[in-house]
Length: 73
Image (cartoon, rainbow, N blue to C red; front, side, top):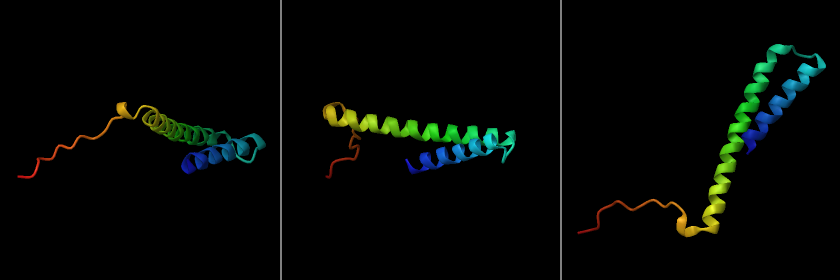
């Protein structure tokens, strides 16, 4: 979440610099990249939270790792 917030802050600053004339349009691509990275990070967080919520609501349907070790002799 912290990384996504940092990416959003970076994109916001780049766009602000472009709008105020402190930087040129060449930073537009950097701002878009920062927004894309933040969006991907936030989507992963959303998926993780949804999986946790599903596990809490329906623990019997949660995917669990099977023990594939051999029993002791």
